[in-house]
Length: 412
Ligand code: MG
Image (cartoon, rainbow, N blue to C red):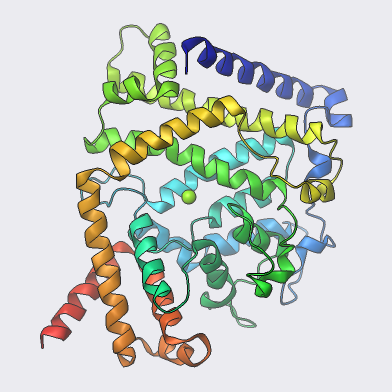
């Protein structure tokens, strides 16, 4: 992108952001919603249809249903295991890399910022951010790819959103009256649909989740909050790992180049590592502001006045502007070419795929070696799905321990 375009992007989102803030501050804005989308937000009213749960749960005056769901997710075992799951880099090389848990916290911060600026339901947005990666297997995307390949050979697929739904509906067994976390319909719909749509033909079992309609804006913003978080974090961790160099990133990623120049003007005598960190913060702010401004403009442009208007619109409204979208794509291409597919990570990915695949094959051929709770599930779920469920729940460290034990069993 030419430098003038980058400047335009920065100043246009800054101006739009201040318009939003001004509108929300002014009584006129707050009264008629000039700068926010509260009329289109999901309601936290106890009788709202999205508050429905599989099992009755007594309401409490001190917190809304989405606040209750937030606590249930945060207290789940699957959530705690995010601390032991790879985001991009395994923790073996450094304690400073993001895990899925710290990545999740960064997504929450962005999602809350966007939801607050637009007048959306912050509690729902926060809960969806908190739960958005709960279905990821160990070893990041390499683990997910391997599990998907294993299941394909049995005529099935692994999908982390659908797996997340299985976790919150079945695998969390902590409550006296029911299996699962008994979350609201609004949270369950957001778990499935925040990053993609599912067709009713292919997923008749998901009919209750309004498959023909778009999800609420609180769910739509999660996918891009996730993108903003990892586009920033992966450059940071990439440089921390020594696999990326600041000058190379500056030379090849337009938005970083522009942001770096901007902070360098402000701090001409500061070391490159501090400027790079400041540049990444500026980039994150620019993308976040762009998401806020574009979502607001799109929603106004279709004249949406309520949640049903958001749902009925054929496309998602929470997106980046064309300029920011081209920046995002360019940076993502760079990350794939120089980081995600570099030799060092490819070696790790190959090892991860080997571990997942060998364990999957072992338990499929020796199901009696599975823990008893999983053996009991085979009759209803089928062996391949049960093995995938078992593996998907593991942390990186636990799956490596299992791998070592299984190797010893095979040798005996
Ligand atoms: Mg994520």
